[in-house]
Amino acid sequence: MPEGHSVRRLADAFVARFQGHRVAASSPQGRFADGAAIIDGLTLSQVDAHGKQMFLRFGNEAWLRVHLGMYGMWRFHGEGLAGFGRESVVLSDASAPESYPPAPVGAVRLRLDTGRNIADLSGPSACVLMTPPEHDAFLAGLGEDPLREDADPAKAYAKINASRMPIAALLMRQDIVAGIGNLYRAELLFRARLEPHKPGRDLTRADWDALWRDGGELLREGVRLGRIVCTRPEDRPKRKGPVRREDSFYVAHRAGLPCRICGTPVRSETMAGRMLFWCETCQVG
DNA sequence: GCACCATGGCCAT
DNA sequence: TGGCCCTGGTGCT
Image (cartoon, rainbow, N blue to C red; front, side, top):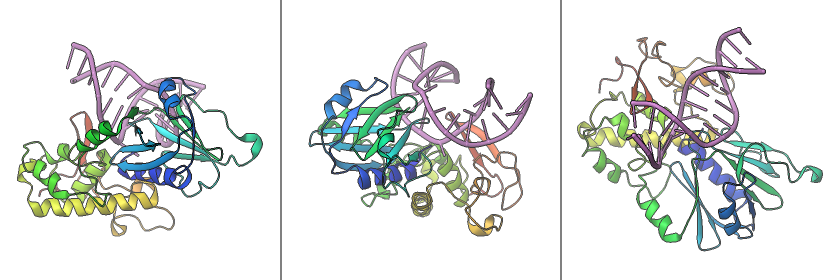
């Protein structure tokens, strides 16, 4: 269930438990047998998250690009992974010797095993090896990731401000902004009070700067919590403990329910194949 | 127990 | 525009 925050958490797990280790690579399901044979026995030398893409470098020459898509997940087994749980990171304590290595669950495209930790990848939309030049070229086509220190929001704004496409569609384009998915786009536009159909070219630089800043804050909060929470404390029911899922959004998945701010029923429609949610009373900017 | 849906994105048409 | 990848969660029975 990945937007950019989940991918960043997964990358953190790989840095903590796999980077610097030689890994045995295999493809229990068989569909990545050739690729696994190439990286088998190499050391995981670098881990990189960019938007919804994760890159793992093996040795010097092989980059593995993984995109989880809608169904993909990493399932980890092993020691010392507490704290990396939730969302697409599923953990099991396999520290008991007789339970290691555990049998693959489901169709595992790729298994990486350090001897102490195992990462099983299933259902990804992309699991491909790339040469360093291919990796560079791929990165060049990705948009700006608000979670990255090296991101340049001005580059994203230049593309947005040149387009007649609705801002709600532009926010989803990974070659413009990397890491925003359907939930964050709906919630960011609500929090910014922006009408989702507003053409990108009509967005002011001030509009964009505020959107970018808020996106970075929400994504970082998502990394911290391991889930997406977009409501401000004053806009959700007061209660102790973790924020409930149904209290986490202003408009996403709330079609027909009253807007938390004004009570108007939340609207929804399909835009470019994805469900868009918004409040027509609050979002008039 | 099961049908349906979903936080993506690619590709054929 | 729709199929597909092929998983987990949800809500119905």
